[in-house]
Image (cartoon, rainbow, N blue to C red; front, side):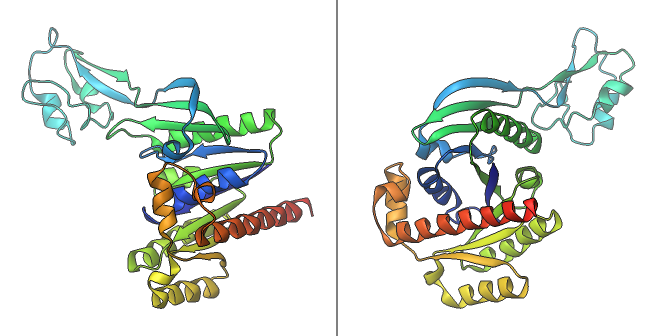
Length: 294
């Protein structure tokens, strides 16, 4: 069983569109949406939820007004301005550090466990999807990513599947690191814009730091071929393999409007390139398997 994680240094590069297309092309696979802060793979795959699980993580302060003597000490020591003048805790501002509970002279403050989101095991017409939904302004997205990846691996082993395909979050923060940990190959989807180039370099350095083999797909490469050349120069200088250059194709937008993977929506130019891309990914995963065996 091999795991592919699809990530991007920034949002809007077409990462989820490519992940949804891989869901169609791959055989004997399990799908994971690791972008728990803003999950959207389910909009295309239309899953039927089979398991709905609560995600408990972190704590928030709670003030018992019957015990509180309104001494103001908790409000004074709170570095996050989470305690209002009425001695009520703002759950969004509270970081759960617990200092207010420690200093309260009458033990009026307790720390209560949070339930910041839910995680799901669902079925789609492409196979099993493990995904999650984190509440607005909630923390511990990295912990939630680790939880759903662990569950996904257990299911894939039970079903003796060949691949786990994970749609990772954008950026380089904690959930990205949690998505990459232990993966076999990372596919970095970028676009030929200045921000795309900058963020590609950042996320490629994260993969290098954790020893994850990185492949690059340049989506919409023909909208600025000068920037595409800069990406190619960076990849050549850093021994990063470019496995696809997908031209701008309105069929990818139309497929999203119809809530379908583009490879199912039409046999467009983008579809043909994505099919070739998946073949290159399979070869790269096979190569990593051979290297580990040797």
